[in-house]
Length: 445
Image 1 (cartoon, one colour):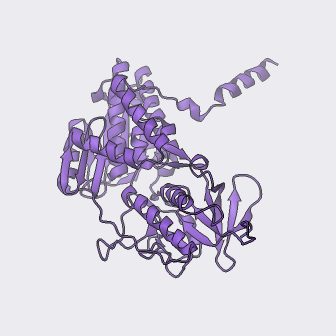
Image 2 (cartoon, rainbow, N blue to C red):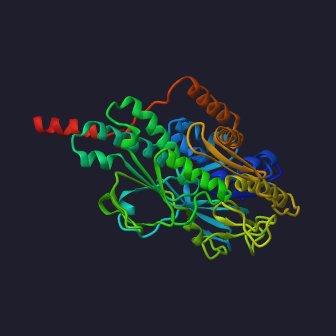
Image 3 (tube, rainbow, N blue to C red):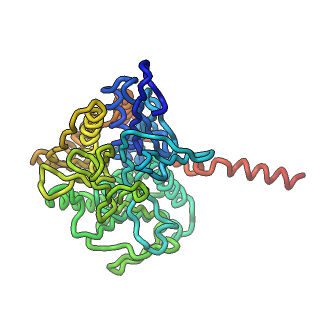
């Protein structure tokens, strides 16, 4: 549609909404399987890169360079049309998508096959003060901002003479005991503990790290015994874990918990789950009760033969566990993307799609440098072996050979050199110093 091949026949467009894990992998596989005259692949995402989210905790802790955790879409998808924009509406009757670019007027593009892979966003609650003071942990920008913030608070604590300011600066609250929250608090506490070596007047015991979880256990993806082990290991490091507890308020950074605990914290990190990206509500497709796109086992959206969906934002029947849906994990996402791409290729070539089926093999989690837990193929590992398995698995999953080598290089250097404990909080306000200098010039004039 719009472009033709050498025979004057219109080339069908495959529109992929979302350039995250599912979107990028689907596009990459389609491009490998289809010739340039068979289809035009268009990927639309507000970001020009894909973030490998399992590595966010290590990027926040300084074990990995931020640039090595993201993959530029245009570099990986060289034959694709990559639009840094948003899809704001879908007209199924005309098979047209409304595109809103970063700058300039909106426009429309036609499509033949549509892939919805917009993923998920943070699931927040109307808690007083959360929107003003909470920090998310879903994108690379948030991970690096959190790292800079934590080290910036240590700078404050090392400099101030006010004990109340010092105590607030060294209090860190994390809400949500799933993989994201546990790995984030474990990696950042490990980093801060290591950073204490260059702050003569800050000891690890001076810091207060608090994990707040609303359910009765952490890491629900692994067996209860490993969750209990994780709690014990965190508490050995001085990290307090509060189960069956909720954040009720954090106005003016004054944290109030449902068990009556009150404290003042400079850092409040929200990792209490995700929800489907609400943009799908404007796409004219069937949604589940929680807002997920309803998909068949073939990854086709229910009621459509040209619309597909997978990943965090889709509700896909888990054929390996009848009656359940696939969990929102990287393990399913990478395999769903592969099957989705194969099915789209089959449809373009006039063949029938195949059903997605995968038995979950287990989970791995890092608890800081050389520490972890794993529950894989009914084998439970703890400590260094689990940590090594975590790194090995995710290194194998991170896209492109280029990124794998860069990640391995970062880890290798970390064996010989201590990680840099430098907070660059001012990088978020690069014009402050120049604006101050310009203001002084105006005063002098």
